[in-house]
Length: 508
Image 1: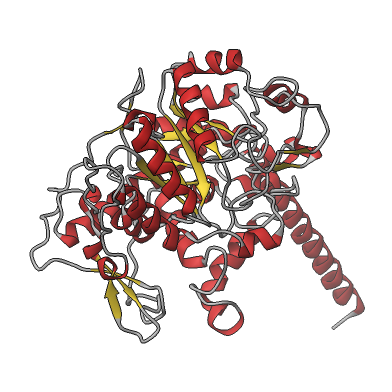
Image 2 (image 1 turned 45 degrees about the vertical axis):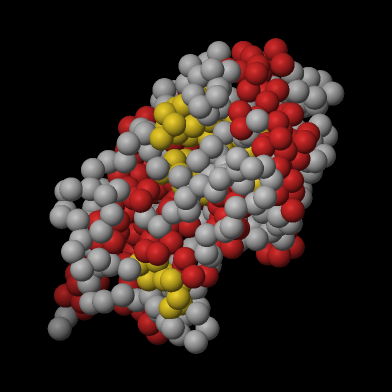
């Protein structure tokens, strides 16, 4: 082997190495451009090339999980199995699984639906008919969908996220709650039905001193897409505390919509100054209904329940038309927004306890059919929604379920303005990754699959449609490992002795 030959080999290998490295760099640059310009995936669009590693690791995690990572059902607040179901549903892919359930059905609180020996034939369970809300309002609302999009404000959520939700809600034929941040042009973009939420700061309908502006409220009510109004008393993340919008999220546009100073953190009062007791609440609700002519309800996390009994007695004294048209019940275990940990962790009842309790109280006073129940709080999968219907809900609203449909990866940065998927940020750098005309299809697909699989459960239980699910159709596992029917845990109440004409409504 001559020195010349060795030199030639070295030169050849060097050339090959340079070519290989150059090719890799060129390939990386091409992939970088592809990711940067594509509109389908927010993570890859915001993090070209690097973002692909997340999906590589996700695929590899299926094989390595049993050795290094948490199991499918172990993560909080939402585990991998739940997120994967939403990911497949929102991509309009098959949501079936193989080799048996990975869920431990012997744990306390596990749900077991009671299947019928002779279920409804597939396809016989048609779409649920619209349900009227606000029969005493000038413009009652016939709500077309059981599943709806819960309150998420523009400001807490980004411009493209609101656009995608609005357009997705239109495709899904469900309502979108504006959240307490006021009505923006992006809510109107998709021409969907809207519920305008009035928070304690009264963003969008406030005077300079923070009081309710009847003129602004009247203007909002003239918007055809606004079908109902919701007075927010409290929410899951912050029971007993007002909303928190960090200064970094208060842009000029958001400040103008809300009627607050630009670039300053906005902390809402912990309650409406006008509402200090049940009588005040009914007065405020009827004031808004008189001004707008549309159905009005309220949203609250339930803790103490004595005020609900007092409210029901007042309704019977004043007349059934004075009742709120709906109650949105939120769970006390946290929501999408920023909140102190003690409030998220330890204040307010979970929906599992509060929903059947409120339903029973309304039935006790004969008001169950007058006041519609909207359940909100971590109900993102078909089984959780079906449980809520069994417990007595008329509607179910979810925020985080639709956030996952938009592409949320549970990075837990909702309050930091650095959301990597562009959903909960006002930073254009991250917002560009979320392309509304792509994500609205995922919103609609998630709604479609969620609705379909709830109907599958009701088919299995032998009822004509999901709202006919009752407490007898679900059993709840106890500490002993044995399950108990829900109608035994939460039996129908005896009618309250308020008036001789008071009659209890049927508990589902």
